[in-house]
Every structure is written in C-alpha cells, then in structure tokens.
Length: 214
Image 1 (cartoon, rainbow, N blue to C red):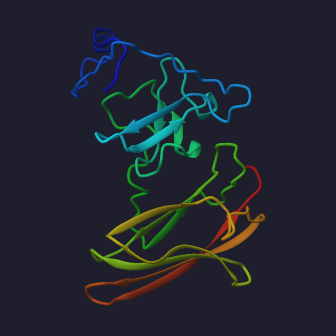
Image 2: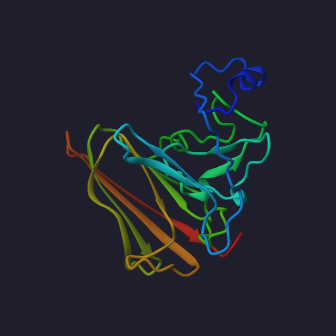
C-alpha cells in the first residue's frame, strides 16, 4: 500500500497487514477538472513491464473527501468507470474489504442477471452502465449475448460465440452497433450458451429499461 507517512498511517490503522510503501516524494492530487480538460489527475497502475493494467481519471464528483475513502464497488470493472466508485460508508477501509463492494458480481448465481434496472446512461456518474452477469454450470462455454429493441431487431452483439469460463461479467453503456446512444425505452437482453464438454444448450431473454436521468 502506498502511503505518504507510514508512521502516521500505522497510528490510525495499526491492524493493516500488507506492506507499506512510502515514496520519497508524494504529489498532491488535484481533485478539480482544469479548464479545457476532461479529467483532473489520472492515477495509472502499471505492471513490471510498464504495461498499463488500469487507470483512474479521478474527479471530485466521483466521491471521497478528506478522511473518506473513494472505493471501487466491483473489482472486475475498469477504474475509468465513474459509476463503479463510491464514498466509503465508514470513513476508510485500508487493508479491508470495501464497505460498498459488490465483490465479483452480485453473487446471485443465476444464468442471467443485470443491474441497475432501469439504468440511465447520461454521463452523470449514477447508473450510467448496465452490469450484466452470466453464470454457467460448465468450465468452458460458447456464449452469445445480444441486445434487441422491443420489436425484435438486433441492435448490438456484446458477445458472439465467445469462449467463457464458469462466469462472465460485462457492461453495456446504452449504445448500439454504431456507437450512438439509443433512445429511452425497453430493450431485450438475449443470452445463449453451449457447454464445450457436454454440448448442453441454454438460452434466456429479459427486458431492461433504458431511462432518462434518474
């Protein structure tokens, strides 16, 4: 864990077991978007070969404040999704599970589940993306996930015969195949899977509401 003062950190959170790394210099994060810029400071996480693993284009609208952690709700989603961040409900959680964490998906175990419903992809940082969670009963599955309008016309293929493991989580931002935002209304989520080991075929569909700002 990166800290600006390891002694001060241990005084407040003495039970954190992970190593504390104290850089020689500690930059001050700028919480406010500057004129002409889309984001404030960007935090970048790189692996040992300097390839970018994840990044957070942080803005103070996302939550958090002095003494209050900004927490990632679902660790499976990228850091650049504003809707996946929230203020800690108990001040801070260093070394512990995030107070608002959903873990790896909803944990329902259902073949298809999605949330929130309705969702409103309007860029306000709340309910901007639909999270679609799929759970399979076999180690390898050929999966297709599609979005249709209520008249039954195919609008978008999120997955097309993709090989997936026991589960898969994907997000939809309310756009169609061309990348344009779809109008407010009801949309059909269609899912089918075929198990690679047994050939078992499953399919289901459900309706989600794309709404105006909530």
